[in-house]
Length: 228
Image 1 (cartoon, rainbow, N blue to C red):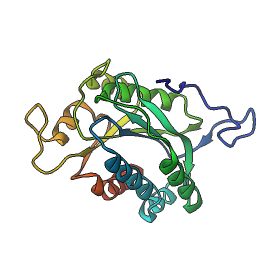
Image 2 (cartoon, rainbow, N blue to C red):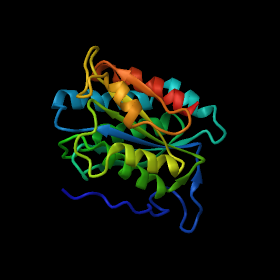
Image 3 (cartoon, helix red, strand yellow):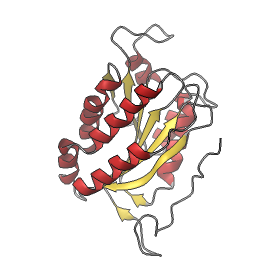
């Protein structure tokens, strides 16, 4: 599998004239989404639809409109295989209903990447590199990671990747997709594992969804909290 190179996007591809400075937005947001082998085709479709619905929801757009720049920039990463995290939606500006429709369409149309085990540390490293190379600038930089299991096969442990990202000024929040009563290999709820191993930075938090049908609701609440 060939990974996409983590180079800065040319100004023309970001909608900027050649030589122009990156446009200012209120938030740079990486959506790091679990696409590992535990997710079948129906669950994957529900997940994609949930993200598309949440990103275009009026409550999310209202939160964005209330910020100084009135815009955020979003990219989507799929993760799973060790060292195999892949950018499936490049950076896009989200500011209004029209840009929300374009972003939702890109999310729904992106081919599924080939993933396997849960390598959360590698997903965080990939996402941090995307933030460093973003064609937009913002004071706030956030990785929003969702998953249905703990870190299993990362080249670097999730805790090490998390600590490096936080030291660079990046916050990491998490969405734990787990049925009520489900526990990880540590004998605890997935949300608790993510609190210990994944999230970091000022105000970092975990939101839970009971299954992929609940992702749109959980993600919508999470996005509003992150933006506002």
